[in-house]
Length: 258
Image (cartoon, rainbow, N blue to C red):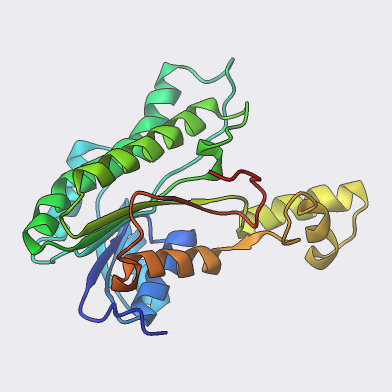
């Protein structure tokens, strides 16, 4: 399927590594001109070298000053597609996470996206076309007791997405939230391998994954590439009827109709 991304420019935040890099790569394979983002000097350049495509841009979007650095790096680029992929989950409990931890979670998972939306939205309005896709988590619908600062921030990102979708009604700009569940990353695989071997589930990922995914109807963990496929579709002109949605990609683990 041709997603009709040729000639469009996409900025993927936090695309110097992990799921963001895979999203950037998939958009590039579909023909988009991709701005590969790193927070610190050298990160984006290394990612572009690994990918063999893209334009490196840098700026610590967890601060106003760093965001301005990124905007300067993007000068001359007409961003049609904004993928707010960057965000982090850090350890903490109700007893251990202090006010600074909560503020940091908000800076990383909410204001990092808000800064970019505020900057790129006017040019999208002028073109009467654009795509803004925020990366959330199923935890914004069903948060855990642990990492309360992270889930609260991701909940704010979800409500921000719906507010923005209402703001952009009738403009040609489409805004959506993609909310993955557990994703198979090297870190997740390593942690579960260690836990599974200790519990006697087996020695290989093929042995252990079914035990990890006992509560996931598809019987496995979602792959990062699958998240990238969904994001690429939502970024395309083919998804023009999808707007203001929280689309969960979790293998059916969250058994809710809404």
